[in-house]
Amino acid sequence: MVTLETPRLILRRWREEDVAPMAAVNADPEVMRWIRDGSVRDEKQTRDGILAWESEWESQGFGLFAVEIRSTGELAGFTGLSVPAYLPEVLPAVEIGWRLGRSHWGQGLATEAAAAAARFGFEERGLERIVSIIQVGNDASERITTKLGMHPVGETVNPTGGRRVRVFELSSNRYVRTTR
Image (cartoon, rainbow, N blue to C red):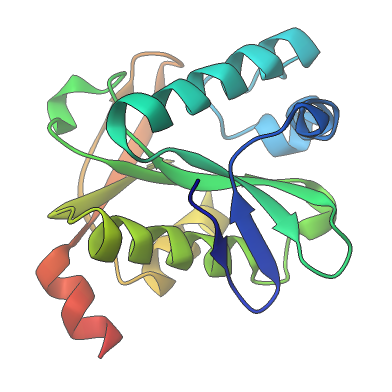
């Protein structure tokens, strides 16, 4: 089982007790406004999502981590890697993503978690590039991509939500240069 630790966070695989707090994150319209068409998700949809994320761990060797606050044990949300099959024009690719509950915004936690996930992808899984797909207008997530060293490579429409998205990219070569 892969577990990553940062100064403030533990990135780990999912547990049954994570379903309810993640469902609370997914039920917040402000959190979900930049996800697909902006619809919130209920507990069943959240459970199904977690099962799919765990399945991706088994099939790909990477996936979305549960993000836990080290000092409290509270589930903050997720970060990690997935294959963006919903956007075929960027494939082959591995996407880095994050979603944290509102009480965890503005503290640098998403950047801290995503940086650990990117490091895992490049250093432990040997990925050549990582993309991030951000809805146009989601300035907070775009700032995170910048902090990760990513750069924009194009715009398209996400067919699952019908909204415009920007695709950001970080190559393993650029990652190595920016982390030394």
